[in-house]
Amino acid sequence: MRHNQVMADHYRTLQVAREAEQEVIERAYRALSRKYHPDHLPAGDRNEATAKMQTINAAYSVLRDPTKRQAYDRTLVSEDPRIRAWDVFLERGVVGLFVDRLSAWWAKEKA
Image (tube, rainbow, N blue to C red):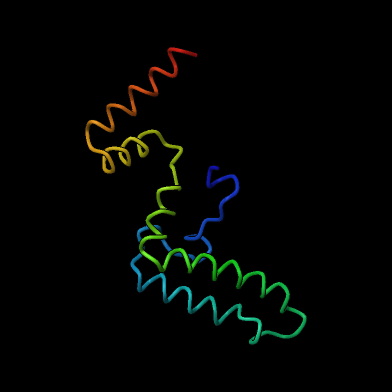
């Protein structure tokens, strides 16, 4: 499953950058919670606010936990092959980058 097809963008939901520090994520969550909490809105807006808060809470539950955040970040595969190559290099080193590029080349040759 690719994140741009189905998965929500938690960083966009909380309106923070991907490299945001934990304090920034927490401040953004608190600000959005104050803005969209159903108890702070008129009765007519509560259904929409409840749905928005569920999305905000889901994003925060992932981004506040370092382990969950790291796993989530790994699912954000870039469509730009240069960035993908850099991610592979950082994660698996030179050998991983070579294997990744060789596998891509081999898949093209077989097709």
